[in-house]
Image (cartoon, rainbow, N blue to C red; front, side, top):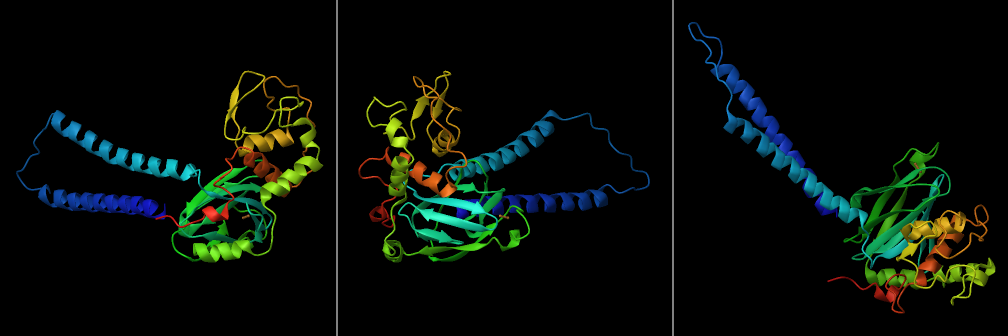
Length: 309
Ligand code: CUA
């Protein structure tokens, strides 16, 4: 990703530089060549289709190259690969809180394996922040009340700067941290320490503690929809719309259950707004997600973190 962004940037720089050089050279050349001379009169030219078409088509192609190249990078950057390791992130004044699928929690420091796609699922507890890792060419605003997503594929082990790139109050400049990229082996060792509970298990426990399980049963008898296999699929709503069950949909359905009622169900679910923390919400989302994964689920499985060829 960083290579793509850099290549495009250098291309823009080179094209702009060449154009500037060309324009300056022509200005000087014409100023000298057509300077006022006694007895010389300008020759009148009445348009040239060939010339006009040429100077329209060439810039058009150049600008379309910028646009297409930029768009391709943008689409790639906005689409996290499905085999990504996932990290839930909660930003607040003034720190970054990370939670891995395996349950490890970190503050202002994020450990990731080299050679693996990593997807950040981020939300804010207060104001707008922005997740910025210059070395990875990744910057994404982090908003309260919803998830935003970013992803990267670190190739070289090392420690990289993490910044908050959105002014968020007095200590904004202190809202910094580091991303530690480790060799996959070292990462596995690091990950296996601590005896943490996977995020989805924490979510499962919450799911029964909060009573969700009494309505969202795994058969068709519940008062709420059966959630097995729902994540990532289209959902038919009572008002005729169809939405995709992504992280934001699950989040909204927990906090504002009446916002999108699934076809065939009544709006009977109470809201959990203000009753659970962002971390608990993340755990519930991770649990609902885990209900849709194959037994060999790629995400949240350290054993799958083998280096890519
Ligand atoms: Cu958070 Cu600036």
